[in-house]
Image 1 (cartoon, helix red, strand yellow):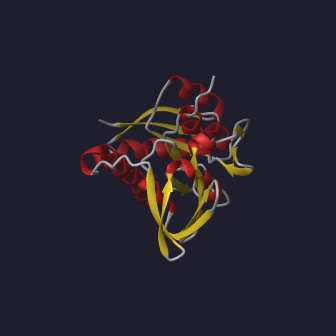
Image 2 (tube, one colour):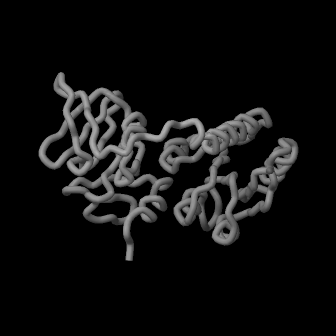
Length: 236
């Protein structure tokens, strides 16, 4: 089955190049090519796609403004003539960042990255051994193993090669990565909301714009996680 693609770019030549690349690839179906973010957003609100090729600088609605308004997040490949947006791209969790002019080999590299991640996701339930549904973990801190009940943990922050557990009574620093912690947290109450934070959803005091508050701590929410956060809390 071909992956469904749309192209959003205000430059006709750029759109044509990407359409030809998609056709040459053979596994992509271009369902739309738009010259502005407004018409693209209207299409995306009515149709779900697999891959979005998105220019950053466009009149009226920029690429990032379009992403802010999406109700779901397809695989996003940013296309731009500038490299200034690399950090923003990372914040939005985009799959790849292609600098114009785009070569076919670089285009193929981005598509391969997407197809491999989709295959891995489809195989994940078969290959992964289900985690034991425990409500506690042991962490190595201060030269010993300390038991933490999930209800004690407020949030977890990445500190490079270390992570810091913030609990109701005490904080603990241990050698680990946030990715490793995320794989160990079997409770559905925990969620990664930013590249540097995992939070206990039950401890959120309030949410405003792109941040949340737990025990007075303001924690940022990445654009790519915002819709999932809202879907996992009980909003009335």
